[in-house]
Image (cartoon, rainbow, N blue to C red; front, top):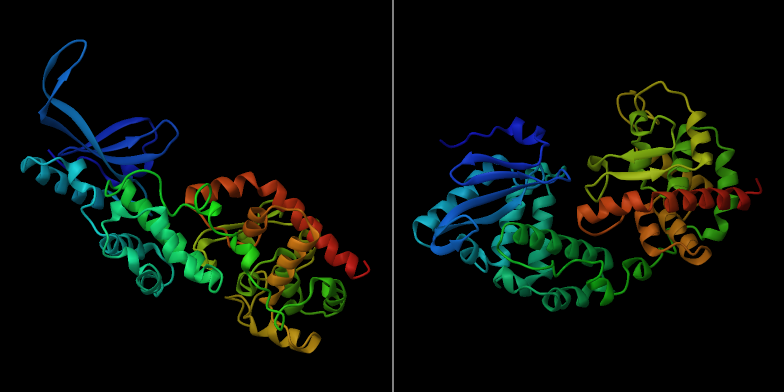
Amino acid sequence: MREKLTAEFCANSKKPGYYGDGGGLYLAVKPDGRKYWCFRWRDRHVQYTTAKSAGVGKLREKGLGRYGEYDVSLKQARALAAECRQLVRQGKDPIANALGKLSFSECVDRYINVHETTWHKTKQAVQWSSSLKTHAAPLMNLPVSDVDSALVLSCLEPIWTSKTETATRVRQRIESVLGWAIDLGYSSGENPARWRGNLDKLLPMPTKLKKSRRLAGLDYRNVGPFMAKLAKVDSMAARALELQILTATRPGEAVGARWPEFGLRGEIWTIPAARTQTGRDHTVPLSPRVVALLNGLPRSSEYVFPGRSGDRGMTTAAGMKLLKALQPGITQQGFRSTFHEWAVNQTAYPDEVIEFAMGSQSGEEAEAAHFRSDLIAKRAKMMRDWADFCDEGAGN
């Protein structure tokens, strides 16, 4: 009997162990709560010996990837198990047959096909495919198991300093595809596109390469006087701009803020993945200065800064108009460069703390989750220091 498992059971199962779906497919729940798919079969070509018995048909296991909405679903796992059963019937080894079976290009296509339904931007699949075909062309026709750090580096080095933002995205996308291939057994070993402990030893930190947009950003030494002028403007657009500057967030993230995104005590702001450029939740520690700003605002809508109709947030156009009147020649987005310049030139905070504060972190999602937790205290202190700097320069 097959298809014993249900999507609901897979989502709710927490007790460690192996849960069979039939046909050799199992959901493995680890003691730490992680869940993996695997295919188990008796290899009739291998003899085995145990303390109690001996014979032919050693039990073997092949991983089929992590379980989850953003990884391998029950339906996808069943299809992968069917492929494995076909190989066993043909007398082939599902593990050995998987390595090198797919090219990197085929892995890109399969990865996009699996994940595109969860991406909040409809053009994201096209962007993924286009960027990798353009900047990772040397990898495309290679067996995915042959891709190593040297080959990844050969794709990134030509654009790392001249197109840093693009190069960072390309590295993240290569890492994701290779991680998927490793999970499903098409490659093995450590991920050659991993940043920490790997490429960070071979390439300079992106934050050290990003050039400040001098014509669009405000010199950090002038941020205090600007904040003093901004404080005198009695409008919601002014308060939205204050929030954006003090949290180093993007203009759209600030004007689209909703009250439910803020913690019970108002000290944490979690911007949901659907509203971030990275496609991941971004947690922002709030300084007392920001908490006071929020507490002084009316709550007439779900939105912190409601538009005219009240059923959506205000647009960034209001902030652009205000900024043009107060400080011609700079942009709202430029204040992120202002914050970055201050952090690099006036503080000793590590690069990763600055990166996470700006919501532009890189790395595997598991690693990112670890650093969001591990660095939250340092980031909270940095945001308090930033708010104090803005107030001191304003003469407050």
